[in-house]
Image (cartoon, rainbow, N blue to C red):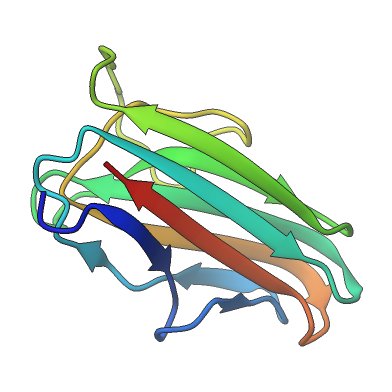
Length: 138
């Protein structure tokens, strides 16, 4: 693997600033060919406001032509951090491939050579609400 160790999933090179409603597709993190496991942490820092924030981690095995959800979290009006561990050592059948289709808390043990985050916001939050997404590749 080209890049073992920690990495950030960002949008425009920064953490996701949660303000208005919409679907936000993050930057693509590459260099993970040969990855065997990855732990992801979603850290939601609540400022003010209300609504729902759905965060999806996606991977691709065809150089970004097709993306598949591998983890999903839901946040509302409280600061919270959650972890998920994925490994290529477990058999996983993912059919059909979904985008923004996982139920929060659900995972698919599939690891491609790149990752990105998609964040879906409903409601309105203040500029002090942030979502940090960190991965630890190994």
